[in-house]
Length: 385
Image: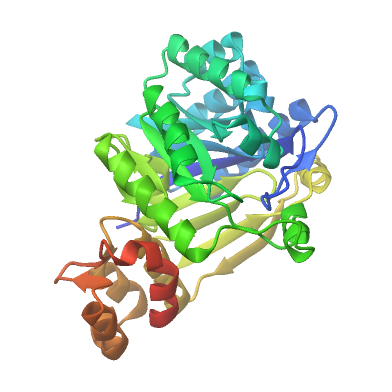
């Protein structure tokens, strides 16, 4: 039986590049959105042709970026209608649009809702003017607050807020004030990520030059634990290490990733995973260059730069990496199906060591990280892999 199928659409445009961001995005003034949307529809049509015998409905559609809200509402409507003309959708198909406060207004929200978007993910990142300035975000704190009021007025029942924490000199008290404000808007979902520094970003260079430093490990851990405790107290379940949701409001799109479901990657730099009827798993990736993506689609050529079979052991490792981050855990039978071995038995010495330290637990069905181990997931994975 094939896994569920989702669709991811990458919108690579930004008004400016954030200094911590290593996602595939480009700054254009103005961005070539009309040409890009035409190319997206062409690629979607191409995938429908390749999967002509695949009758799976889409369980979710996700516009990610970059900044998808730099598209106009009519452009988003056209893309969604094109998808609906070609693919069946489940009755409760989750359609998420990532948005930034500086590119959202009342008319845009109304148009998105009319077009079928039923979930927003707003990149606020901080409810602190000083931290927004440090992160070099293109919006002000007042603009973020205004946008959140507009989202509620527009009638979006499901919306998520992205927040970054563990920035230099951040205290528990100041972070609590930001969490209090985030919770006050009634968001159904919160994504709270500790600041990580990727190479080839301006922040990495700042760190190398010792312009500032991240909080020490003990301080970061304290903020992590406080985040989980505070949000649990206010009705948000930590269903993944950095993601918190009200009951029944977990992101279905992300859940499909973490359960090793299939997804089509549409757009510049988009990645995909497709399982064939006989069980083979294929990974895909598109060119990262916007101009090359546009040129290839204009010539009716594929934008793929990678289309390769995923080896069974590599597939099992990916399942493990995803599974231990999720509250439900890793399905032992799924790992056995992919790798041909039971993880507990195959790596019994390491697994038992982790269980003795109260970092990992399991039963006949699932392998799960413990409450103690959730903050040490990376170390746990390094031990097992």
